[in-house]
Length: 157
Image (tube, rainbow, N blue to C red; front, side, top):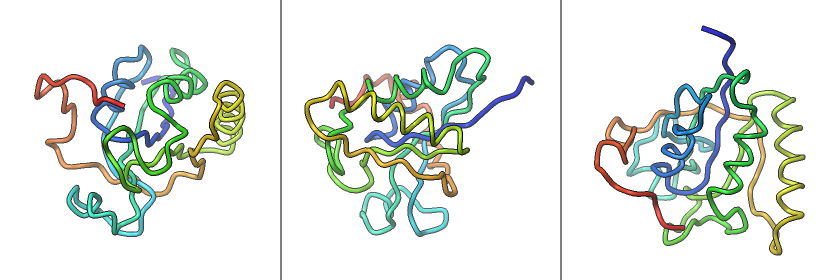
């Protein structure tokens, strides 16, 4: 397989985030999971309790020859409200925070420039954090490809 990269984004409920990224040409895979907390291998119920520090997130595997990290970032900014602190729509809690978890210094630099560009377009301050990606924990199987399995539409923001 050609060179692939990973990108990790938290933008509220991971079902819609995963589905949105999965449908971008050049994205090889998108996996729902948890990132940024203190507990190893947390469960959905533990993350939803708000006690683990994890965010619901999506780990995207992509072919940079077919889709750039910049394009993924642009989708990220357009797919949720990055000005909301610890929530997206009706979902409230630190597990629904907006975050970009970078996998290299180049991704960090690109993400910060992208955040600055997004901020220039928005009237409110962006709450999105940018930090190096710690361990990503894959969510339970019933969360993977949730909309495909259940015929549901996207989460409302």
